[in-house]
Amino acid sequence: MVLSALCASLSSVFSGIVANLHPVFYPFIPYWTIILVALCISPLTVLLPNLLKKELSWPVDVPDVWTIHGKRYNLKAWASEHPGGSVAIRSAKGSDCTGLFESCHTFIDRSVLLKMLNRFELIDGVEASPPAMVYSNPFYEDLKQMARDHFKGQPKGAHKMTVFHLSLCFSMVAVYWYLIYQMLMTNAYWVILPTGCVSWYLTGNMMHDGSHNALVSSPRWNWVMSHAAFPFGVNVTAWRIQHVMTHHIYTNEHDHDVDLHHFDPVISMKAGVNSINIVLHYLRLIYIMSTSIAHLVLVVPYGLLFGQTDPAHGHKMYDQCHSILAHRAELRWEMVGEVIAQIGFWATCAYFQGAMAALCFNMSIFTVSSYCFAFFTQVSHLQEECFFDPNDEKLSFAERQVKSSKDFSADSAFWGHISGGLNTQAIHHCLPSISAMHLREMYPKFRQVCKAHGVEVKEADSLRAFVMGFISFAN
Image 1: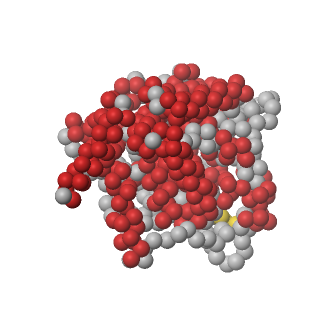
Image 2: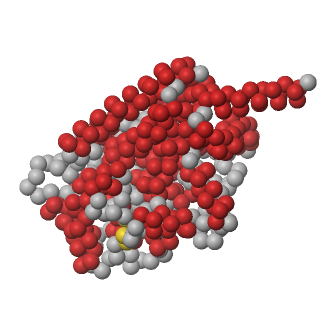
Image 3: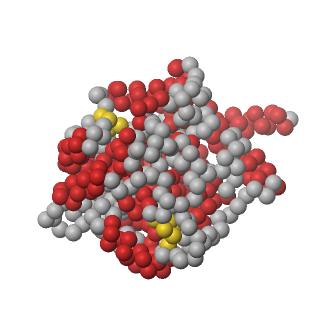
């Protein structure tokens, strides 16, 4: 009797899914079922065991220490005065933020900045470790000078997003919410593809620039507009930890860059680990990449807030980042706010569409936006030739950024626009405070500076070669 009732219940659930899901997404049903069931039972299978072992940890405050160029500072009093906003200062607390200090201050002389920091230096007898890599060298100085020359004579803030492009972005925000309204009111299948694509457009153009304070001059509006892709974009606060605090400084360093560990242990970004038959590998990529945004929206903040150990690989979320305790503590309430807003949106969908239709539409749109996100953010770095020996002391910070990126169609206005400038990752990683919309114009000069210093700029011969390089490396 119980078994019969269970079978009837499951049959009803899957009938509801099939009735509310576009046929294109039928092949994803088994994978989505596994993922959703795992999430639903994780409080019992993951959180409870961690709780009983006393391994859970709600983020707690850490000492007010920032390390820059081998000196320790207390910047708490400066956070509210910082021209780049308090979030930029708070999120770097507890870490060696020399990389952020250098890459985010392209237009201000280093000696001026260090002189400003003197009043915040901690003189307590505790010595900080020197930076792990060289930041000041002729190559990086020439790149910064190139950027200064490019915007010379233009109004202050000219390196932020242009008015024309901002207007396009706001137009897309209006289109985005029109599509979401249509989804809620009509359950129309046609909105799935454009909503997922527009979600990526806003992620690449507004969220990404906003997270680097490169969108507009106001840090407050950068923070607000970095949420433009909600509700089908990433959790912006968790993204700041992942992308700005680790990936942009320690790109492709296996012990630091959390981007290399998102899909452990199913896909491991180490040569020869988890290699499988090529057909199965294609299927693995198709399924796993389809949930990359859903993973960043829910799984990552879930792991960061509770600090649980994942039984699949024995790691806590982002524990490859050595200052993760500080990042979790300083940004926990922003993360909680985003999670609550996300759950509120899903509840709204369930109210207007019904629970089953809401689930099907959300997962379908997440799939479209996930493929766009994975292509434009991951493929450039996950190529065999983009990895190097992190212990090579000859490689400076800027050289590492160029060496760890492979660009494609750098002179194309179309790809530069659609990708949010992420087809030119090498220059973006060196100069992240400049809106990606300027990078195509700057790229010829960037090539010249790199050539003058003997730094190879990796550019794909074709889009096919670019994609195949990633597929091969991921296996």
